[in-house]
Length: 519
Ligand code: URP
Ligand code: ZN
Ligand code: ZN
Ligand code: ZN
Figure 1 (cartoon, rainbow, N blue to C red):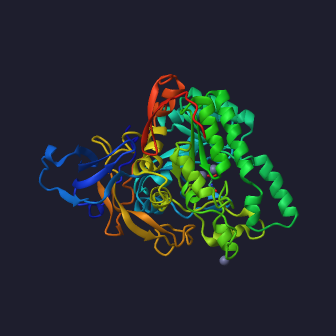
Figure 2 (cartoon, rainbow, N blue to C red):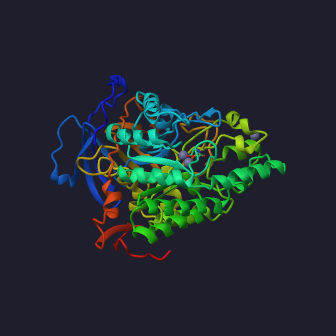
Figure 3 (cartoon, helix red, strand yellow):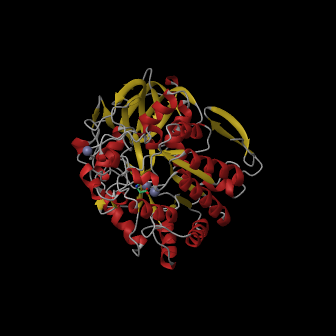
């Protein structure tokens, strides 16, 4: 799984860490399946050794870091970002430099962004454009999903080229954004069949776009033009219906499906039900967002801007039990990953919807704070153990998108994307101190336990002593090969009837993959 060739951009030597050899001693390694005391030795960006100090002779010229009392975690993988995305006539302000810098500051060392072609645009052209925006700017490794924003024979043909020649294995379809990106059910079925043929992973934005379009018109006609109209036009059942339909369509096409940004308890339960119904524990996967876990929409906004800055799709829910409810779904392996959907706009950009909520550009921050939010609301709250934290912030995304074990694991041979994580330290989130380009933070004032004291990106120390020192262009494009075993083994019946060991909130459970679990 090597990055595809690209023009080599030399990182100026003064921006590089002095050491290409790092020895981390006395830490507690946490992987998704077990945690143990071990030393970790890194050379040239790769983990070379994980084990007891007695088993290694450390060469000279090594930087030694004492991690006593700290955890050593695989760097976070954010499977859902939108850097410099054109949306609603505006371009999101975190570009591939600022966005990946914010990611690294918060302990995320790999991001997966979306190539979203315009309607009628060649997918390959759009891919080239996105690569030209990202390469040379990214501070950490990255990959792409590609959006099926329209459907035709040429789109279907180009999907094959993307898989075979450009390191793409995942395609996102939209059931919402009518008139822009939305596909109908027939188009979705054709796309799902094509993805299955290519051994790829289907992704879906699940909201019923037809219902939303009608509700928006009704609300505007009734004089509801403010930001409160956004959630009113697309309430929980509008999301849950689409999740269920997407799972049925995927099942009809026998295609694995990853439901992005699950924002409500009802939608999460639909993912869980489909996982039980169709594949035991394989075939269908669900992602939620830092936003859904860290906050909700209590409608106690101080002003129009405050409300508009919280708008994304699907929306934050008014139900205050949502964050904990979704965290419990993650704990039970009903949902598998956490992303950020980082798509940040400044207050002035959101004003394009001053007189019409449907014109407010959609998106919030999250790439920097996701790891701390999940730790605070999950581990610190007693709902997750550290192994499950690693699974849902890193390993599961690596497995689903076929980056594992290069990413998502502390093990010899893996990339040295490593966090020295202090579970006892706290930090207060604020737009005054965050590394985003935007002038708002939806988690403003939150105090989180769990701080990435040091962040290593392929062995390069990028965060220490509260300082963030990234190198623009240091990141590489990661090819994501088709046919991820984690996704396709179960579908192909390779594990059918066999017992699989699954970590469910830290307890290894033997599950028959066809076993029906009770929700
Ligand atoms: O509000 C959101 N989620 N903006 C980004 C586009 C998308 O649907 O993911
Ligand atoms: Zn979406
Ligand atoms: Zn204001
Ligand atoms: Zn998104």
